[in-house]
Image 1 (cartoon, rainbow, N blue to C red):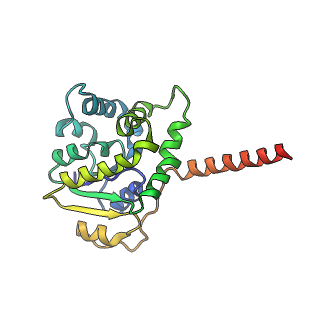
Image 2: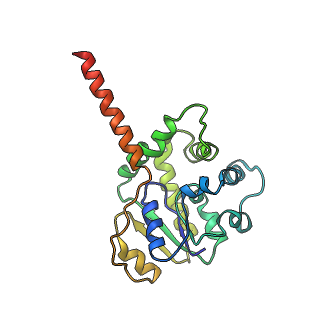
Image 3: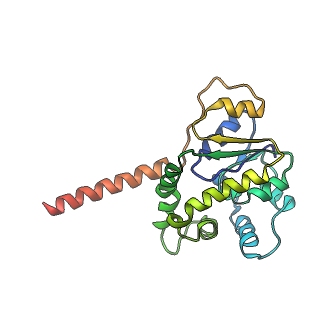
Length: 222
């Protein structure tokens, strides 16, 4: 393991994952890898052990069964275990991705992960439901509007504390290549820094649905 990106979702985690790949640090474990590798049960087990004391807490041996073939990681569900991963992989450099404007982070979460969870069918047939249902419950008690900001601040504080004495970078979303490449000791690529968002299509669909509803409501009043 070369790099642990331990910032919360919606702090540019997908973009920095793709940036690391362009820099030759690959593969990177991101949320999309969970379903592709059928790791839902493993992450559910890890969360149950951490938050409910069920089973053995995950350490290097357990994490390696999921992450052993990867050179880096970013995003949920891996970053639910910041201190554990820092201890498990002492050779890895640590990056904390941030958004300087907490309100923008909060709004971005509300428009994506929280909106998707709130509007999912009940019961949720998605194969990712065993993972997503747990992190919504364990990380903000199924009430992100009330507890989300606290979860964001706690994540950042835990990473900063656990990363003491290690190679550590706080990377603010939108900072581009320079701070990342300087930290990793790598040349800046002659291409733009990635700007990726797995939720882009979802957000467009939601916006279209909202605009259609407004139109229908307006027509109904006429």
